[in-house]
Structure formats: structure tokens, C-alpha cells
Amino acid sequence: MEPLSFQEYICSLDPTTLPRILRICSGVYFQGSVYEISGNECCLSTGDLLKITAVTLQKVVCENVHTGQTTELLPTFKGLFQPALDLVPSPTPQGPFPGVSGKKGLTLHQALAWRGRQTQPLRCPTIGPHALLLSPVYEVQATMNLRRDEVKIPSTLEVDVEDVTEESQDVHFSRPLLLSEVLGMEEVLPTQAEILEGPHSATIFESAWVPRLRKGQRLQIHSCSHTWRVLASARSGTRRFLLSSAYQGRFRRRPRQFAGVQELAASLQPGQQLHVVVMQDCEGREDDVPPLSVGDRLEARQLLLAGTSTRLLCLRHSEEEGEEEEGEELLLPLDLGGSFVEEVCDSKKYRLTELVELLPLPCDVRVVATDPALERDVLGSFPALRLEARITQPFLVSSFCEEPDKGFEIPPQWLDLSLVLTEEPVHSQAPSTHCSHVEELTEAFYYKLLAQLPGGSAPPPPRPPKPKAASRDVQVQPRPAPEQDRARSRGKRSQVPRPTTSSQTRLAQPLPPPLVLPQKVKSLTTHRSTPNEYSPRPHLPAAPRSRKARSDTGESTGPPVAIAGCMYVLHVFVLLWGTAGHEVPGAVPMGT
Image (cartoon, rainbow, N blue to C red; front, side):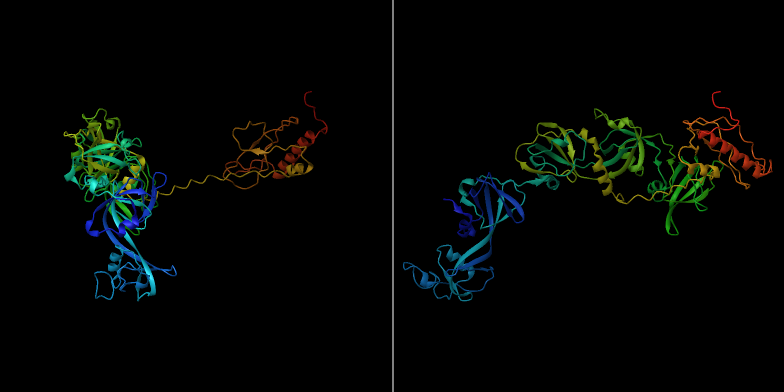
């Protein structure tokens, strides 16, 4: 068959002969052309095969022979068509449509079928007196090799095709699948597949087999795994794991630790009590929340609504109380901080299945016997693990074709990929999946998984406000003497020592004490100043202490305050006069 345009082929196609297989012949540039078909990009390359399964009329374009104007008709158009006899060539038989005598005209669909045998202008009184040329537009439903969904292509697509149905009877059109779809096709397992596109999601496992899931890799999918998992995290680090129910190690319970009342309340199971010991002193809040001390034994009972807030009902027990005594009732707010540790008296070794059946999760454990099936069981290196939640998720037991004996388990809901099933034989013996007993999780997927768990998306409660620091005693700074203000106004030649409170500053010989006001204060801070290292000053004797200053007992101990003030002014004046370069009568020069 000679190649035809796609429009010509579809217009001449007999729907009763479907399905038909076509080969793309032309209309392709640079290895392939990308057409947007039904909202999806579809690449048609030379040599591609299309399997036509259905053809549906979408509309008919009527072109006026004289003016070139076009009109679109829907497939439900009710008008009748007749040939334009004045435009029919003379060899063409006259009269109405051949073989349709006695009729006034044909419907739209009949006219299109007649047009398929001969192209002639038609007239439709419903549209107008002018002759028309009909151009139908069909929607073609087809299947392409290695494409998941059927495509819907307009017949006006500008490509050339040829019919290869007869010579392509043994051609199989492979339909891509998602790995999650294979979960519902247990009847085809075991099977072999080829990956067409790797996982779109971020990496979830820190395993060596995950990066190998890329395009072109061949897999053997053996069966569905019916094991459940347990989410676990190391208490002393940031590593997280997914443990299979097939894990053969042994565990021993460890006391759980709770950072605050909120964690304590979250671990409380309905109808059960939780016994803990306070590991950190906790300040109370006024009268309704008493303080907690290290060593206090608490029994967490239940959550209660107190006013507008929810509180945790606890009983505080003392060592002197008997077993029949209830203890002191406490209503602790959920935002109260602190540190608590669970009271545990259990030395039994548990399997993972026993732990999940007998103990509520989360619980803290330690691996006391590693899994003998693993070459290196990393869980044995941690002093404590927290088993957080049980997870039921379908897995597929798989292996790489080049390593059929080394199996692993893929969770399609978390790690989906596109593949195509091949009809090649599968290794008869099921592979070993020991490496999937412990899968380490990436940090990003761990938090994503936590958010998907029941109650995992709840925001954490607000932390309690930090207690206000105790106000320190206000230190009264001494008021500088008036002579110092005068000295500043004279200029920067005279350097007046300023008080300093730094304990690291080297202290010099102190100046006479400042004037002490006759009033009671709790304490006065004594400041010492640094001497002027650039101007020498004479050695001055210390001024006598004011007798009028009050002692710690509040009794008067000296002469009137006015005498002490005058002596202080005299000594400062002598000091400033000497440092300014003036001779002081009666003073002995330095160095003599």
C-alpha cells in the first residue's frame, strides 16, 4: 500500500475492518516530532506502529466553493445533502445519488460515506444555496507500543502512514505498568520485567539495591510479601530503621524516657497506668502546680479537662506510703517540662512478634541477640532503640536478573516505578530476603512516614515559659564631686580618673572616699579608679573618713559632714593643681 496522509487514510477507512496497524512514514523532524494529543505529549517517530481501535466523528468542516468561507457542523446536524449537478463533470451520471433513487437527499453521515467513494460538491438547503465541500474531522483511538494509556489522535495530524496490518499479525503491543499495579496481578507472578523509568520519589532506603532501580534494569518479581514492619529509631543518634516481622533477633525492654508531660501523656494507653520517676527538678506554678523533685515516683492515670486546659492526672507516691494508699493527686499541665524515666522490672528476652503483641508501642528496647541471618546486624551496636509503630504495607519480593538468589522487598506504594512485563522465564527458586530484615531509612522519608501515621501530624505542644531571672540588688553609684565637673570644663589637659567596675582592670591606689549622704541604703558599691599614666601626680595621704558616715549598725561615728566635705575639696584641688603643671607651695617634687 502506498503511503497516504493520515486524514486521507481515516476518511477512506471502513470501521468494520478495525483494528488496523499503521506505520508512521513521514512528517517527522530531528528523530521525532512531539504532538500534544489529548493533553499529553506523544512522540511519533519514523517506523513507529499505531494500532487503530476506534474512529469517532468529531465535526465536519463545510467550505463554500465560491467564497472559501467555512462552517463547522456537529455530528448531530439534521440537514440533507444533494449533489451540485451544475458542478458535476459531464461523464458523471446525472440525477440524485447513485443507488439512492427516490430520496430527497442524504444525511450528514450518509453524505460522508458517499464522499469517501467520490469527491463532489454538495448542496444543503438548510445551510444555503451555494455548493459545499465536506471535510470531516475524526478522533482516532489508538494504542502505541510501550505507552500506558490509549491515545486519541485527530485525523488532521500531518503525518503520512501506511497500512501494515497483514504483515504485523505477530506484533505485540507492550503496555507499561506501574509497580503498584503489579500488586493486584498476583496471577502473573512470578514474572520478569524491564524498568522503563526509575522512581520519581526521593530515596527512602539507605540500601545498595535502591540506586540500581534505573531505566533498562531487568527485574524478577517473585511474589507478594505478607510481612509487616515496625518503625524504630536509635535513641542515641539520628538513625532510623524499618524492621521486618521476619527479624530473628532478641530484645530486652528498657525504661522509656520522657522529655516533659506532653510526651508522658502521649505514651499513656487507655485503661493503663504508667509509673515513672522524676529525673529533674521542676519548678511549680503558683498554688495549683506543686514543684517536682528528683526521685519523686509518679503514677500517670488519665487526661482530664480542668477549666479550659487539659491536664494529666498523676499520683505522687512516697517511700513511706503503703501499697493500699493512693498517694497525692497532681494535675500537671501538658506544657510542663521536666524529665521522667519509666519504672521497668523485666529481664525477659522477646522476639519482635512478642513485643508487638504484648507491649504497647512506642516502647524502648535493647538488642541482646542479633539476627543470625544477617552478616552484620547494625541494631546490636545501639544501647537503646525505640519501637515507634507497627506498619502494614504491601511489599514485592524481587531480585535482579543477574543476581537471582539475592532478593529484596520493594514497597510499591512508597517506591513506585514504570516497567514493562516480558515473557522471558523466571528463576524457579525464590531468593533469600535476609537483607530486608533491617532497612535503614533516610531522614526525609522518616519524617514523611511519621506524618502519615495516625496522630503523627499533630503539632507539638508549646513549651513552658522560662522562669524570670531573680532581680539583682540595685547598686547605687556615687555622685561625683562638683570639683570634677569644674575640671572637665577647663579642658582635656587634666585627666580625671573615672570609676570602673571591671574586675579585670588593674587597681591603683584609691582616691579619698566620696561624700556619703546621710541616708540608709542596703549596700554601696565601692569603685576604684585607674590612675593617669601620662601625668605624674604627687603622693597624697588618704583623707580621714567622715565621722558622720553611718556604720552598718546605723550609729553616728564622726564629726559633722561639712568638715569632711571641705577636706575632700581641698585634697582634690591640690591634686588637680599639681597635675596641671603648677607648683604647689610646700610640696616636695617627685623624684627628690
